[in-house]
Amino acid sequence: MTTVASMIPHSRPSIGEEDLRATAEVLRSGQIAQGPRVERFEHDMAGFLDLRGGVAVSSGTAALELSLRALRIGAGDEVIMPSYVCQAPWLAAQRVGAEARLVDIDLQTFNIDPVAAGRAVTNKTRAIIVPHLFGLPADLTALEKLGVPLIEDCAQTLGVTESGRPVGTVGRLTVCSFYATKLLCAGEGGMVLSNDEELLDRVRSLREYDGAPTLDSSSFNLKLTDLQAALGLSQLERLQSFQERRCFLAATYREALSFKGVFLPTASPYTQHGYYRFTIRIPHLRTDPDGLPSLISRLEQQGIHCRKPVFRPLHLYLDQSGFPKSDEADRTALSIPFYPDLTDDEVRQIHQSLSKVLS
Ligand SMILES: Cc1ncc(COP(=O)(O)O)c(C=O)c1O
Image (tube, rainbow, N blue to C red; front, side, top):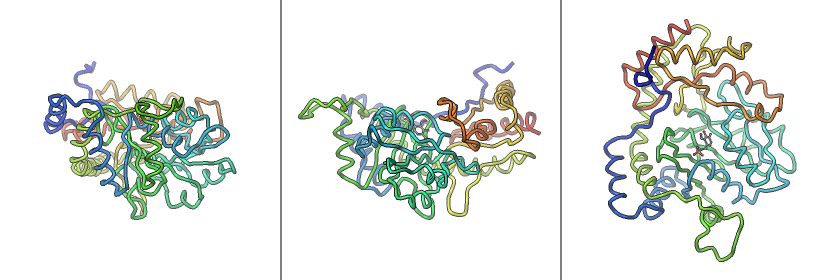
């Protein structure tokens, strides 16, 4: 029996000495809540994406909600999003009173299918939330042609390009998450970034009620702290080296995991893959609802913690049908441990266990 201590976790933050120093410095400074480090984090993230500005908030989910509010989206409006994503985009639409119009994905990329998105556009459509899942950019070029404001959800993808353009620079607004095991770790946290100063001002004024001239029931306290921002800044400095390690690990996995009947992540000629997750697909599991859970528990017995990369597609929570690709991804996609700190030994163990279970 494998003990918890010897399990290879599915996700793990990469925390180094520089992160410890950066956060200790904040603690010693006495300025822990939102302050100059939050401002610098916003400035440096905007610089990284070459955008005019950013507004840091408490989570990626909050960033999505405030993006919709900044666009003045509310009751009577529709927001398009893929079904195959975590709950955050749907929650954001619900909070502002808009209707979430779910669409299916492209199974090769796991990202929103632009043709399905086009079919869902009505005269009430006010935005499309475009998650770039697992490190792979969605087809922004096709989505742009729909003529609807795009909110790029970069919670899982940064530092790669689509058709030569960096992800996060194409939409009206861009949203990031700095949850503990995301590309940049701040524990929790998020940011809205844009070239549109007016939209950013609206997000800024919604983020906190202190100093507001009027009582506004849509104001919140959704601030990030300087403690989190210091960690985020320290991680941002190492994003490039994290990325290089991710690409190296992905190449190693690609060589080691070429099992019959297993599909490895695909990029395309017009996109790079940033490998936030290494998500494989095992098509023969599509007819067996217990196939993936049982595979995950067999791998767990081998000491490898794998997960479904999306816990449950949104349409299944909502009892909607007509999303065959999301259904197939739900039954066949497996996310295996993948993060910059993964050691060569762990990669070997993962390979051995997957060989036993899959070949
Ligand atoms: C694609 C996507 N969007 C939004 C979020 C929400 O981010 P947060 O957890 O910071 O609220 C996540 C988090 O898992 C995500 O994966």
